[in-house]
Length: 285
Ligand code: GLN
View 1 (cartoon, rainbow, N blue to C red):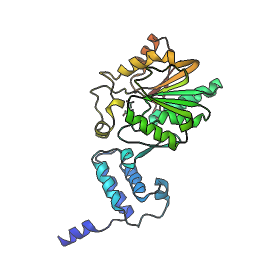
View 2 (cartoon, rainbow, N blue to C red; view 1 turned 180 degrees about the vertical axis):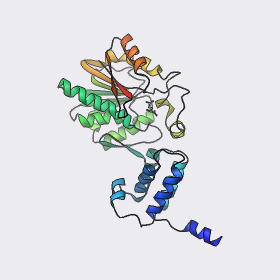
View 3 (spheres, protein in one colour; view 1 turned 135 degrees about the horizontal axis):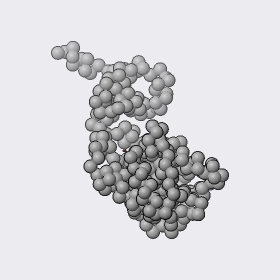
View 4 (cartoon, rainbow, N blue to C red; view 1 turned 90 degrees about the horizontal axis):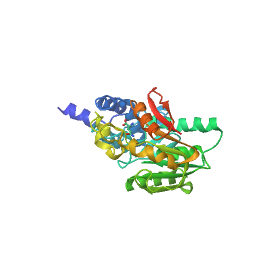
């Protein structure tokens, strides 16, 4: 009895705590070890690289680490516990008011970069519809340092986060934000329109960390996940300059439906794939 309570209070080394936490999180996370490392690094106030490369192993694990693991065990996403997520070249503040930027969405930035390189001109102004944390817009502005941007979102809270991120990224002088429903009321035309709309079908099976923590406004879009494309795509021709293009994120099984909606609007569509070879971006021109 005494022995087991002793072992319970015995401080764990960082190596031990990481091992136990990774085992513990395996029931809720596909990336348990990575989650544990990120949360440990955060608790220590260092980067994960420093944790892995440094000689931290024998030191005592901080209490805040165990609190973070408890939150993760209740399905809270790592990014909300850390308060940030790295996306493209940027570290972005995220809160439950915004969708956590996914690596999949970097496909849109890659697609746009490849397109403009091929066309040999640089986009001068960029529109991001449903900007959320500002991820797509700020990544693009980081790529094209002379471009100006407009970020639009229906959520006042999201716009606050996007503005904060623009400031952190040093892009504030080049960016404006507007609370609006998609392109409504926007008169200006853009060389590049980026958009990661909600595209999940209403009753799709979703992982608990997404479903219970991330904003549903940014995820779900009617019975088939297509309602917002039906609103956004018809607005696109009036938002683009003559040489402009739109890069829209799509669900892995939506290429055909979204291309069809684009065709009805008189837009040409090309599909681009993410790192796992799933259709992820439709380029409209
Ligand atoms: N790709 C996200 C997910 O599967 C969804 C993002 C979105 O609907 N735009 O969780």
